[in-house]
Amino acid sequence: MARISNKKELILESAYQIFKEKGLEDTRVSQIVKEAGIAQGTFYLYYNSKMDVLRDLAQQIISNYTQYLTEHGDIEAGLDANLRLAIDRIFEVNQEDRTIPSIVYAGITRSGDIDKWRVIYRPLYDLIADYLKAAKANGEIREDIHPDYYSEFVISLIESTARGLILFQHSPEEVEKYKEELSSFILNAVSWTPVKVI
Image (cartoon, rainbow, N blue to C red; front, side):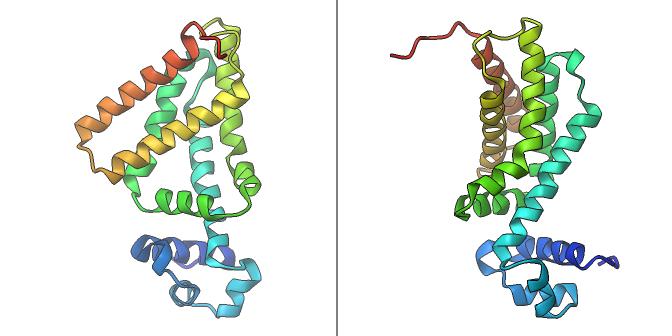
């Protein structure tokens, strides 16, 4: 492991390795600190439990998505192009590391404090909402679309689809087909004539 001077970063890197190797249930704080080469008390200066570490790992993953889309996305390119970029990136990260996104998702579902997780996702939701607002202003999508709500729907759908494909071990060809269909599904969801809910 490369030498890391910041102890919190060292804990995160070590936790990442142990979670990846052992999974959420079988990971112990004692294993994380042993991997990090620090005293167990040092861990508790930064985190109350292994579950607390998941929030910071999630922050890194979501920051990765947001930074990538900020650098490579272009509102002027239209919703279709930006949506495909988001799908590609989220699928790519999930394919590169098949363990951590699932562990982070497990952390979200087990956490009693969903509001803290929403804060982690907020920059990504806001970026997707910006794409939707621009598409709405350009007449690409329906007027009744609420970008803030739909951005959460879109990210949840992309992430859950990416995780499902990993879980069921689809071939690369099938993954590409799913990405195409997912993009089409989302674009149709924001484009079709709304049905009045009674």
